[in-house]
Length: 174
Image (tube, rainbow, N blue to C red; front, side):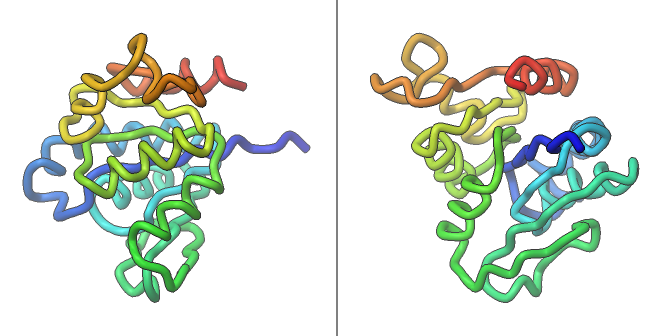
């Protein structure tokens, strides 16, 4: 049996009916559907980008794992499996990052920035889905040679402008 690639998706939390998440609804659903057709998808398991991506995964019968902080009481309904870590948001993020092969970033605030840095520090490739705002777009200004977060060049940071490009990059990493 072929091992399924594990793809983490990080990004904005929050109400999907309010900006900035409301501006990304269709993109996140499409991302979830395309990832769900091919891979096991990991998210932080809560609302916002996480919920929309999990809904997309669910729409196509895929499998998603929500890695939640604290007791997991704020898990979204579309997670296939919920892991209640009992940890705070930042520590939970390290479990998420260490559990996946590649990370896709969509928008995001400080938690997403921490996850981008943690992914890099753990030598996990990161795909920035550009045009989604937040740290996903801001971090580009800091990249060395357009693809590294520091001179050690521990993992490549990729930039995609569409869901199709995200899939192409993931497939090129296999």
